[in-house]
Image (cartoon, rainbow, N blue to C red; front, side):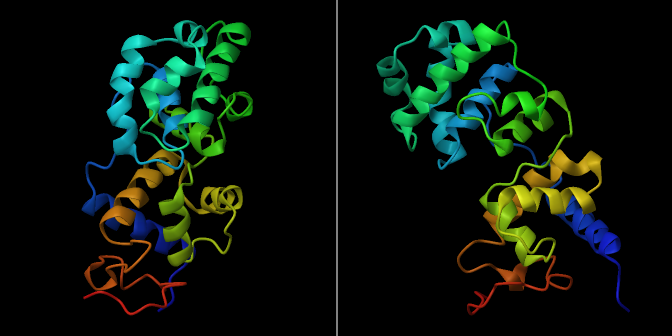
Length: 219
């Protein structure tokens, strides 16, 4: 019997939540929305492990926007040099901190519209902050894992992250918009890998059409 899209999504969510009951964000060193925003900016094209290694010293030195806005680019670079694209990110962080202090009285905005005006902040970063810190569900953060798995599960036909986000928002219950990102990231790291996905070990195998998976599967 053919099931509806909503029924299939409900099954997917239920299985993901059952198999990853403690799913949460992998960025761990932050104590304010500003610090989570900073960590999220650093995580672009870098691993969360790399970011978690540099943020303790970074936040010890520059715990708030005012202090970071007064730092030199060289000071910031020295603290984040092990993170990918650190030179560009150092500029983003200083400019972001200056923007917050000058236009928002050092307070982090709570809408995507305002957040994406900040240097280094796109929709993914904005959604991470809103969902994980504020519990505000304006959208869904789409990273490489979410993009890949959503396509393989036939939840989207798009490759553009913004379009994928819109597709997912239509079928994922709003209360799960923050959670789905972490669930799919966990699944992508453990099972649905970019190379050699472990389909034969996957608890979603009976309802996954495996779109785009054309290589021999690892047993």
